[in-house]
Length: 288
Ligand code: OOG
Ligand code: NI
Image 1 (cartoon, rainbow, N blue to C red):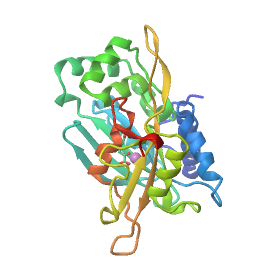
Image 2: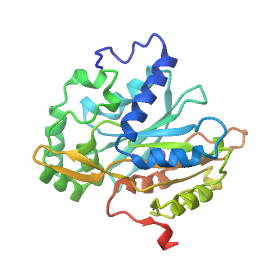
Image 3: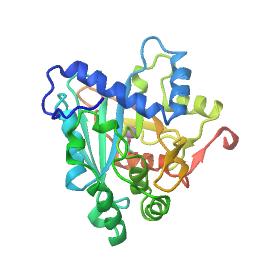
Image 4: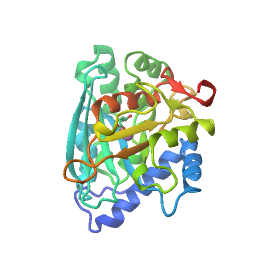
């Protein structure tokens, strides 16, 4: 289904929001079998639905497809801008978005600061984004539409050497990079440590960059994530199995006013980005 409707025009934002997250989830789980399996494991101990804390999307900071273009789809659904985050070493910038409905997942959108990258990377990425039709970006399916460009495997490998993030976006395009389970709303688990233990016992690899648990109660946010699954991508000259998407877990703590902290923690996010890195560090049951 394809619509040229501008993201500013949404007559029924609640059902449009439900539909958008359903499309994002279906598109994500198609390349993330671990998410389905973990959803079932958590679901077996859950009264009611598993609630998402947030999802994350990635892009390049070029006009046609920049962070703000992705955010427009969420603003049209009643989301508003939250905090902003800087990742100097990875050359990334991010913002999060929240909705007045507390059951709506937060949205974390990052973008690669292409102008800070090598001339070679800039040429490649500009060449990819040039192939995106502007109307595709405002279409209602854009956020789960994948790539709008041709890229060959050698180019993917070249990007990988400079920026794992750039390579991931070049290969996968527009889709949820991860969904995140809201631990506060789980009935069978109450800590990141308990989730990590069951993940490892079930054979999943937990991202161990910066420790298996990122953040602390003092940060008001604790998180962990699996290492990304691997799935096949059809490049212009061949297919290859590469890291796809991962599943994340977040527990939030109350701020002084008693409300749960609603932001993100840059030092933790910096490590979570590495969940799609095939050279990243992981801990498994074998290494416990
Ligand atoms: C986003 C990484 C950051 C979080 O929850 O802090 C993040 C990404 O990998 O695209 O999701
Ligand atoms: Ni996240």
